[in-house]
Image 1: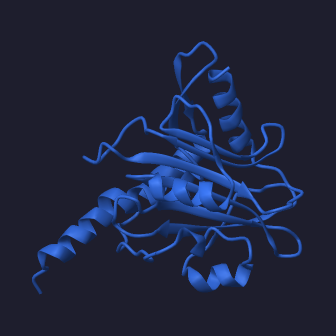
Image 2: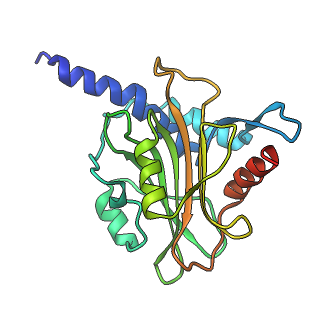
Length: 229
């Protein structure tokens, strides 16, 4: 059966804009390669480990799967702390375990919210404590326009704009005890023609959580603080 143009356009956008970043993020649990400035202001690059590289390559070599996404009108549908492990299993067909965090169990899923410029694509991880309550949420992925995500976090999760040499940097809580971080940056290489694509790293703690952000989040905060001193 002949495919109509709109169906072709949507499927092509899913494969180029959404599916590939989601696979990469799910494979390594973060940026494979990420640009930043060191204390002198020189550009440096973080490189993932050999094991993570191998995992990403193996996953990339797997046969292509049909793109699947769930349209999301409000990101608060999944950026929420009132859910339990069974809710995650019921909402997503495929759930994987996340790298170990002390005292927490992570459940990771692929998120593709749509094909619009403000939609998100990447990996979403819920970290549950021993009472099965969400204590931390992490999202790593891409978008063409972060304004929708930024508006949500600043209006409903108390994130504040910070000075940054990257595409954007936002924090919740204090510098001494941060409860959330959003880092927006440009990837080293873009394999599509969508030059406006933005890398997204988001991590936030549940209200009154006794846990702390990940080392990756603290690295992002420390790097921004050094650059902007």
